[in-house]
Amino acid sequence: MPALSPELREKIKAYIPKYPRKQAVTLPALHLVHDELRTVSNEAIVEIAEILELHPSEVHDTMTFYEFFKGEGQKLGTTRLWVCRGLACMLRGAYELIEHCEHKLGVSCGHATADGKITLEFAECIGACDGAPACLVNDVHAMNVTPEKADQLITELKLK
Image (cartoon, rainbow, N blue to C red; front, side, top):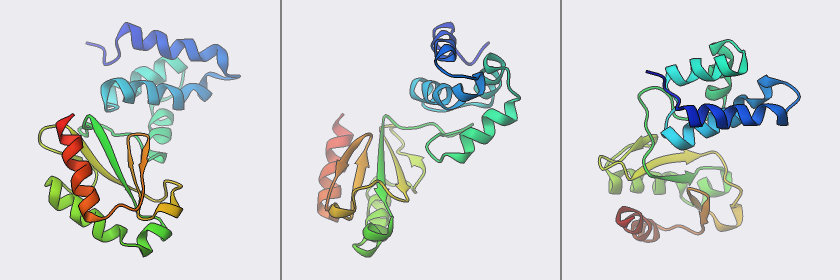
């Protein structure tokens, strides 16, 4: 059984004319697969490589270069909660905030909660230094996040 649905394969193929070479579609293809399946399995890597006429190792190399993608055996929760640990955030308590969130959620960074609702992750920088420490909930910034504010955010995310 294929890892990629016919619809997903067609979405990937639709990107090919937009780029000068098929190889350039690797990153958009990974995003499409990851967004739909919440992971990129080894089978999906092979299928992407076939569509783009690449070796699977080329697709895997691109995927592992970016920490955004989850691979074999690592499935994302419904929501991604990123805690920034860049310099500005680190100086304003990011490491303590990460530990607080790990304790509150009962998971370590890089893992999803048992109910599959939240994946806790850290980022090296999310570009919100003026609001350090900062978090990113999917694509939305949360600024000046205290442990209390994190608790409120987590409670809201668990209700979704």
